[in-house]
Length: 196
Image 1: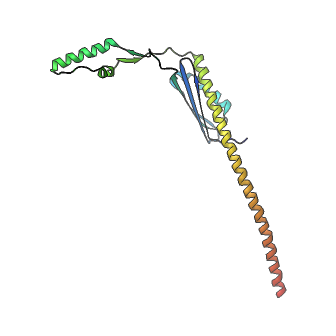
Image 2: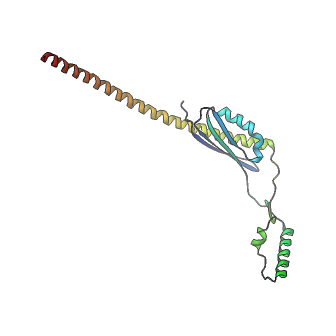
């Protein structure tokens, strides 16, 4: 089967706490050249990921990137540091009094102050869960990439078959014309020779 060198694949694996998305693109290249971009929580799996890629793709320049997102955005992920917010408000009032300025702190201003809002730090991922999700999404993206390369390869094969048929028909037409032309030239040559 003919396979194109260009292709694209994307897959996603959803776990209890995270979702891993992998995108893979391939371009023409004589050998296998892998450009792998993994986010920080997954960098420990680079060697395993490369082995998985090499098991499914033999040639081409592959650009593979993975992303990690929380599986759900729910209550309790954002924390408000109320004591720090109170301190900002008190310091702003004190500064306003000392400078003789009027004005009250708005909620927008307080929430925009550094450290008032913070995201909960998630528990570290277990290595088993992270690899399972990465391997699943990586395999899915590579399977889709290989399938797209095969689809494009089949389209190229069909186009080449049509071109082959056209070329064969044109060669047949040229051979017929060439024989007719040769016969015509030989006839004229004989007629000229006979006239001499």
